[in-house]
Structures are given as structure tokens and as C-alpha cells.
Image 1 (cartoon, rainbow, N blue to C red):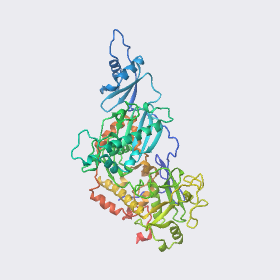
Image 2: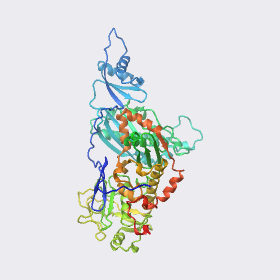
Image 3: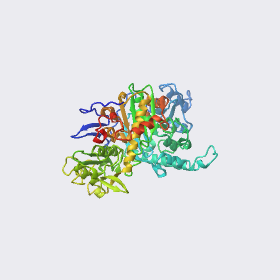
Image 4: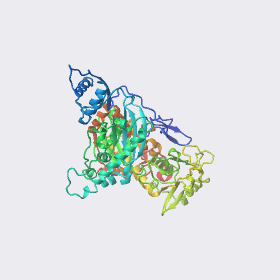
Length: 619
């Protein structure tokens, strides 16, 4: 049984966030970018990038030395390379290499791709370049994010992101697999070279999307897209298959076997990318149909596979993916806890983007209410962190009961709470709903304790212009944001699934939550979530807040690491062989734990000693 550590005092901050204490609640203050330019990464003394720049000087040819240009370059380079791995020179590069080598008068810089089993000579320059750009890509189902990285220094030169254009053909993985196998599904026998037209369309779509993102990434950086010398891609198994044009037919069919888990690097020209044509493309390996390279990146970025202490990684996206382990062993599972938290279930749900409500609080004494949106844009919906805040606040203010059901304002004895409930709870389509934000002018409540703060008597008022999350009547354009009972029900199922996943996985190896040195929470979900509110709901275990660390986009961080460190490239291959995967669909323990977790915070409140119990729970 998990124990609760004291929360007195100020817990330690994480790398990406700090805790601040207000008069009546703890506030998680994530250190988000907020449009500011990212700090450049400091160079590593032991940096061993995916592409290395090697100064080479060879003897000039003469009548006494008639060694061919390519052989001359090969011999000179072979003598300098740090190990005896074979040196490969692609046939397609021979003419360019020989001409550049001769034009440079047989002295310059060789650009060599550092692949697991061999060196590959990709290009020859007359002098050392000022920067050697490479691209790290998080190939998400809904969103792509990329960083331009200098392989000479490790600095991040620029960042960009955009929506995955494949959404046009399906919002989720299964829809896209259906699109990619539409013809193939109807064929009893297929030609070995057959490619489903739907798969071709999806591959063309994602390649075009990556090329557009690349152009945005280099814009204003002084770098041309064709100068990018390497690419690392971190994505789930299906997204990787669609990018490579591999048939995903068996990914969603028992026994759920993909075409490939680990694939050798290829050149960008083979995929139709606008990078340098000889740029190597590293695809993060996967373990199976539902355990992709994005999670391998997360393990790499969290450092758990190199840790002596046991740690946990939680990555919430389309699914909730969880890894537990240390340098000796790793165990992992995935489950469908993600959609409600990513905006996939709630009618007003959306991913963490400008206009998404990311923070909600209700003072349980005064019933003043505060709402903040990402980038202070007019409210358009609510993202996972906002949903967790909202539901936890509704519970603590006793607007909903332990089942996650709206209480009846007519049966409420507290007059202030009853007035607040009458103001906020409305009937829509025959069910109760809670009004978070009204449509009129995109208005939001002001900060608690400030003049004009929303109370049960005051109603909604515009927040102070210029404040974080403020929306003025001039800006307008906001939507009415409601939390309906059906959304609450979905949230309860999602939080129950999350806790059941975590508890089942820990129990599989005979540990308790208190045995964990750290719990890393990845992605936009990790950046915005308030762990205390998640604990209140019974979504995360009731541990000291310092145990939790937000690690940002771990998929992108892992992709950056393989660009810069040979050890990271090897480690991601080693991680695959260390992981034991637990299938939850047939796990009876998971189903029992899921049933017990479908209350706030749990049917066994002793598991959550920090969460207040109300009269009806004590009876």
C-alpha cells in the first residue's frame, strides 16, 4: 500500500517546473517556453554526433603516385577514423566526392556518417563548416515537432511544429491503418511489390508535411534545407510504417506483428525529403505494434535505463504508456487512459494549444473561480491538464460526488455553494453540465482575491487585460466551454485506467509506489499537469510531490540525443532487448484494480491519505 509523505514546507522543484504555495492551495507552475527563444544546449565534451567532420589532407597525385582520387581519399580517411569499422562509399556519391576532393586540392573536411556497423563517406568540403545542421523530429499522430541541432556544438538553432497532415485521413491510428489497407484488405493474394494506394497517399502526405516543417524550421536561421546533414525520427510504430511506406496491415490484427521493429538508417533521398540527399535518417526502434520508438526515446531522455534506482516514466498521448525499471531491467505496458486526457473524449476537449484551458481552480470557501488558457488566447476548449484541475476542483468544492456525478443544487444546504451551483450547472440535452467559460466575449473569471473576482454573487467578469490567460471583450471570439456529465464519466474511466496501469505494473515486480526514486511525466501532459490535483482525483499515487518530474517532450529529447551521442544510439538498441512488455488486455489484476479506482479518489481512501474525505465518505 502506498504511503503518503509529508507535504509540509516547499517541495523541491523539477527541471521543468517549480511549486509555489498560495493561501489556500498548491499551484504547479510549469516553466513553459511561452514563445520565448529556447536556450541553446551546451556542447558536450564527449559528443559523438551522427555525422562527424574529419579534417583530411592527402598527398597530391604525381607521375610517381598514380593512386585514383577515390582510393586516395579512402586511404587518407581510413588512417584517421577512430576505429576499424568498414568505410563505405555509396556508388551514388562517387562522382561528387571525387570532384570535390580534387577541387579542394586534396585537402579539406570529410563528412562521415557514424552508423552502428560501418562508416559511410557522405561528402567532402573544402573547409570546416561554421555549423553542421541536423534535424530531430517527433513524429506524432496529431502533431509534429522538430529542432534544428548543430552537430559541431550541440546547440539548438531553431524549433518548429505543425499539425500532422494525415489527420485529414483519420484522427487516430486505427483510422489511418484502415485508410492504408483499404484495397489490400479485399485481396486474397497480393503481389510482393504491391503498395496499397491508400498507403501511398498517407506516405506522400507525411513526407510533404515533414518537408513543409523543414522549410519552417530553417526559415530565418541562415541554413538551407538541403544543408541539413542528418535526421532522427521518433514516432510510434504505425507512424513509422506510414512514413516508410511499410504495410501496417498486421499491426492491428492478432497477434499484432509489425513489418519491422528496428530498421537500418537510410538516406533522405530514399524518402523524398528535402534535406541533403545523402543525409542519414535514423528511425528510433520499436518493440511491437503498440510500443514505439517515441517511448524508447522517452526512456533514453529520462535516463532510467542507466539509473541504479528504480524509476517510472509516464507518457500520456493517444494511450497511456508506462515504463518501470532501472539499469538492470525494464518492464512496460500501455493502456487506453489517454484519449480523455488529450481531448479525445470530452466534447470541448482539445490538445494543449493556444486557447486551451490549462488551469482551473475553485476556492472551496469563497467559490471564486480562476481559469487560464494557453498563451492567454480566447478559450476554445479544455486540454488534459485543465480537465484534471477542473474535476479535482469540483470534487474539493463538493460540486461533484465521489462517483464523479454532479450534485443536485436543490439538495445543497450550504447557501453559498448552492448559489454557485445554480449559476454554473445547466441542463443541456437532458443532462447536467458545468459552465467553465461563457461564449460572450470569451470572458473569463479574474484571479481569486482580486477586485472583480468571480463569486457566486458576482457572476462572470472580464479578467484584467494583460494578465496571463486574460481575455478581453475586444479580443472576443471565445467559445462557451462546458463540462458535461458524459465528459465527467469519461474522465473517471481515464483516471481509473491510469491508476490501475501504474498499480498493476508496480505490483508485477513486487514493489510499492514508495520504492520509486522518481516518476517522470512526459509530453505536453507532463508540462502542464498539476500532480497534486491528479493525486486528488486518484490518478497518480499519493507520494511526496518532489517525486514527480516533468521532462517535456521526451520523444524529441531522445531524438536529439541520438543525433549527438554514439552511446545514445547504442543505448536505444540495447533498451529494446531489456524490456519486458505486459499485455493489459488479458490481465485480470488490471481489471480488478480498474474497478476499484472508479471513484474519487478510490474505493480504498487509505491509499490517498492526503485527499480530504467528506461526510458521505466517512459514513
